[in-house]
Amino acid sequence: MLRVIGDIHGRTDRYKRIVQDANEKGMCTLQLGDLGFGDAYHQLMSDSSFDVQRNRFFMGNHDQYDYVSKETDEGCLSRFADFNLGEFGPRSLGGIDFFMVRGAFSIDYKHRTAFRSWWSDEEIETCYHEFVLAEYVAAKPTLVITHELPQNVGHDGVLKTDWILKEFGFNPETFSTNTGVLLQRMFELHQPKLHIFGHYHRDWTAVVNGTKFVCLPEAGYIDLPDNI
Ligand SMILES: [Mn+2]
Image (cartoon, rainbow, N blue to C red; front, side, top):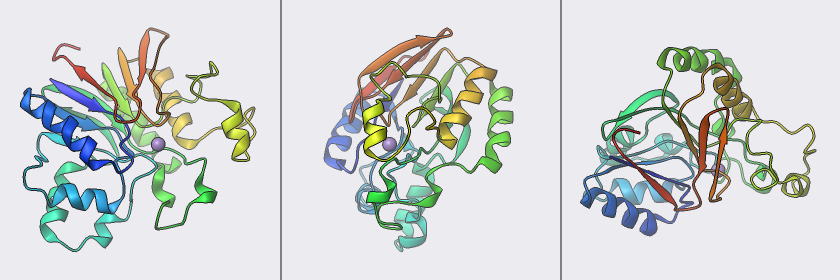
């Protein structure tokens, strides 16, 4: 079984409790991005009781993309390499196969500080999108786990609210992100049974073209049976 965990935003104590509870029940865990910055990773990687084989993550938009170049402890770096599932592609954890894509666009980036609270590689660059699509079509996954969701999903006034975009200076009519567009192209090529994401920090579920979309709230989680 696999427990998928939503955005954590540096609250490592809460994250560790959720992970420990899952591990005690025989589950592996996957955190789907916005875990925290370098201090949070360092705290987890230097804790030998934290099992980086059974518990994994990938990065969202509020994650420290230059951690590997800043961390100097070899033990932490080695464990982090196991912990981080990387960019995109088919993965398997706790006996469950899924397709992951990291990253998202930060609408609040102008209020952040480059290399301290914002990193330009928060999204997979468009030059890689054809590679993502090729791997996705080859895998035809039943389960997709991402930080963001497809561009055209979630426009029901609950997830993608116009006033938030306006507040950060974007036109809701024309707003789109590289990651949203990539995930939309994926969704049009192949519809998985289940797509789990975070980023919007809401308890939200919808079925679109036969795919069940589940948004996890902050520190929320969902336990998946082996036969999802
Ligand atoms: Mn996010």
